[in-house]
Amino acid sequence: MILTRDFYNRPTLKVARDLIGTRLVRILEGQKLVGLITETEAYVSGKDLACHAKAGLTPRTAVMFGEPGHAYVYFTYGNHWMLNVVTEREGFPAAVLIRAIQPVERVDIMLEKRNGRDTFGPGKLCQAMGITKSENGVDLTKKAGGLWLETGVKVPNSLVTKGPRVGLNNTPEPWLSKPWRFLVKGWNVPKEEMLRRDDPRSVRAMT
Image (cartoon, rainbow, N blue to C red; front, side):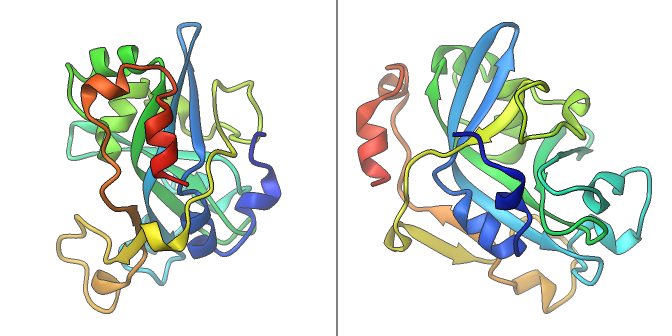
């Protein structure tokens, strides 16, 4: 079932946690690529000095100020695209960064696009799924944009760790150490196992 607008129109930390185990779906050149989300980070309002919204409403951040349930895709480090999902009410800038996925459908295509490397990183998963600026603003509650999220597997709290967000460089405290990163520990299926479409072992690891 595709995630509805109401799913995203909630407190960002709750959305970030509940995204763990959901299915990120991408239609690329007629192929359906799917990965289970294994790591997220929350960014909440202009008061959060790690959040792009600290700069206010700009052409770059406009999507964050808009309707929840849209993709916010930006370019960073001169090399990587990053996928975020917009959360909370319209006018309140917040989003969740999708940091990692475990490929489960058309893994062969994702491995090829990554030259055999993993998808455990926000830039890596965007490369694997062909997500770029073209997906910025896409409505994730509909399939028309070729990018959406679906219900997946329920992940118990015992398998999810919380900790500080990463890569924040000179972000001051207390924002640097906010435990707003959610991660499934130890869920890394070897490449040879990933090549089995819908690998049942990987699903069992999440339940």
